[in-house]
Image (cartoon, rainbow, N blue to C red; front, side):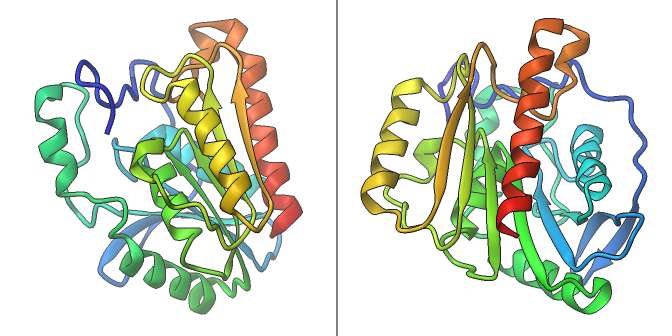
Length: 245
């Protein structure tokens, strides 16, 4: 999925100490974290986890942020009960671990989540945001589900989605300039191929000086110079969803 030295550097050394404002719910065969806005809304966003799982506090913070912006937000466990990657695990075993959690085999979980949002939350309009592994999932599902009206793929590994460019609805791609596993030449090639093959709106944006994981890591506490770009990327994400859902 990435280079051999560090296959997916979602460093959680700066993980939030965050409890969450929502609740855990059962969505057929999977668990999910759900947060609703303070006022009634028929717009929902599915948030797709990174390799550290659906219950990572950082990801739940993003769910709550979306709810604060007027969306029914839900993060389903797309690992379907399998353990998330541990930061203490041996990276040499990562590729074997990843084979048991294929990003392109998440359709069933996406379908039951959409059904839950429709039947239990009265949602009628849908978007999706995914981080890292979830960015790959988002890219994949934006090729298959026309009812997902807007997607945001956040540092999804590009080589996991090669030759898959005919997106059904507007999709925004967020990358960091200094991401060691997504070289800028891959980002440039992705944009060129989207221009050649994609018939809907898309945008590819690179944020200066940023590394993998910057949007949903609290890196401003460690490197204050990152804060403007973290905030910009989050605003861009919300603006894209607002525009197309």
